[in-house]
Length: 125
Image (cartoon, rainbow, N blue to C red):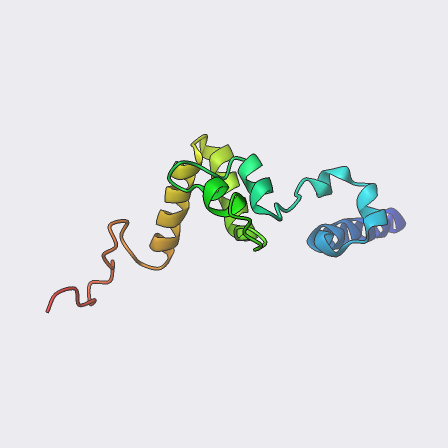
């Protein structure tokens, strides 16, 4: 009985370590677990426009793609956060950008209007 309990503990710890370091796993190991490969980075402006990360208010198609911008594209972490908000809250691109921006402001102690939430902050002279 103790042998099986030890075997279960070793197997559970291997699973936890594998999950924790799943980003650094070799591709051979990742091939056995296709659910780990759900994320693929959007490396260019055209990929990001095809993914829905463009709108009339934030037009990367005419401003970046048509002008032949050579940069890599938008920030990967920011685009993933916006895509997650779009999926979770079922909003369009502009609303998801606004929600993300308000979350960033709230984390930094700033009201959505731009005023600091700190009562000691000097806003008038």
